[in-house]
Amino acid sequence: MAAPLVAPAAGGARSVLDTIQDLHATELRLPLPTPFATGFDPLDLVLEGGIRAGDLMLVGGKPGQGKTIAALQWARHLALTGATSIVACYEHDEVTLLTRLLACELGDVAAAHACRDQLRLDDLREALRRVAVGSARLRDAFDSDPLLAEVEDRVATYGERLVLVRASGSATDVGALGQLVERHRVDRTALFVDYVQKIPVRPDVPDEAERVKRVVEGLKELALAEGVPVVAIAAADQAGLTSRRLRLHHFRGSTALAYEADVVLVLNDKLSVVSKVHLAYDTTRHDEFRDQVVFSVEKHRNGTAGVDLEFRKDFAHYRFDTHGRWVAERLWEEGTAEG
Image (cartoon, rainbow, N blue to C red; front, side, top):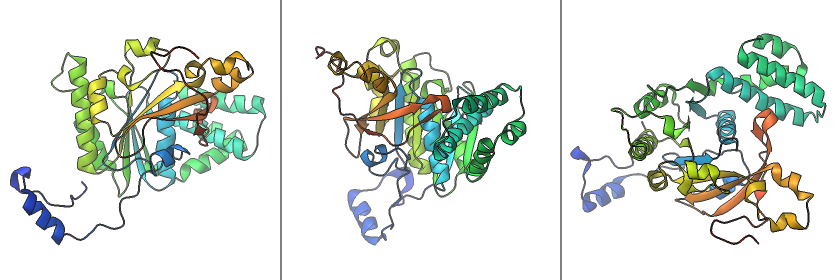
């Protein structure tokens, strides 16, 4: 557990003057903690270096927008840079996550070697798919092609620092997530949770809004107590699933989520949310927009919010191109006339 700057008195209460005296007597902790970079540019620039220890970051989007893909890529990048990433997933088991990670690495390896042989890449992705469903051995896949052999070598450089956990919707509550952090933590550790609405509460609370409130409060307390960043995926409500553009208020349990989160990132397919004026006179941009996902920073407690970025998706390899850009086109806003 991270040591506080000022030790609390019994009961956790101190007067203002006592706290001032403690601060006068306390040496500065230099250097200040380094943010955890996601590896997505310019997202890290907007986040002023990345995700910070003690912060809760929420990532929302409709199904298929790449929430899990982005979180797994960020976790991988942290592990590559020496941190420990814990990925607790309530949707997929460890083998599924691993094969998606390997497909992501395959995409990077193919790009590094300028491999554009789609038939070869299709075969290699199919080999990984067979591993995921249990009809092929991973060793045979690695030995089948030099690209997959390089994938194995890459994963070996950081695999010990990337912990994949199959979480249970009946057993893996916030307390269990805290135990995972304590068990695997090192100096720099981050927790990724997929997803908030699956985390159980004991005793069970029938009202979902109250349950989500307790969960996000617990995740925020966990982030602060352990001195780790927590990145959690949030599901959309029914209105959000049918809306043209998903926003924070469409998250299930949005009131508590908006209050507790330090950063809120919302993912939307660009083709759906870009103003139709950009397609009216140039229909060739349809394919360009279809390949992009807009990352909207809707809340940033310690920085700039209201920022829209875009990243190209390569979902065949379960990855985004990490080199994005600011959205230049006008996006549709709820309640406004289409321009």
